[in-house]
Length: 226
Ligand SMILES: *Cc1c(COP(=O)(O)O)cnc(C)c1O
Image (cartoon, rainbow, N blue to C red):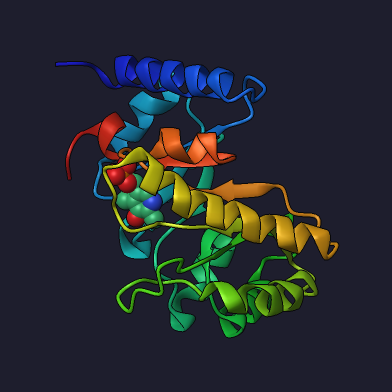
């Protein structure tokens, strides 16, 4: 069985190879290690192999891990569904939120961001397929939300997130990611200074990088099945 350090090496090699194949600068894709349902020991092992960005979906599980690891210089990303009554700990403990999809939540996060911390980095999650079961705003509602979020003082709007329907055909995978990139380009053309496309997981991150992902969110391939 591979160690966590070996799996990181393999993923870094795959990311670098895909960057090169798509004429993207080395290091232009940031690896977010998704540690939902994984123990503190796994996160520590990942940190020891050089990883510092970690993503969690469930606040209740995340907070004790963040506390336990607080002596380490880690960057925490909230990638799960946001509930209005749980925004305060998200605003206090995380550096990034990838799953913003409502203005009311954005307002609460901005109001509750502790004044001693830098603005909270946020990405708006887009429901590309308009699936009822999925979080995210429909593509046609992104611009309005982005402009409103942009005006909030303690948030820094960085870009867009998607978790498209799983596809095995790389061309179909790329179609969804291309759609998200085009949405980002539209917002940029309207003057929003966005630099982040958070897209791609274990099963489709190479297609996401080919379409411009700047953050890939990988769990299973690094830490095993949940
Ligand atoms: C779990 C999760 C991931 C990681 O998925 P893997 O298939 O385990 O790589 C990425 N993004 C979100 C939003 C997730 O919930």
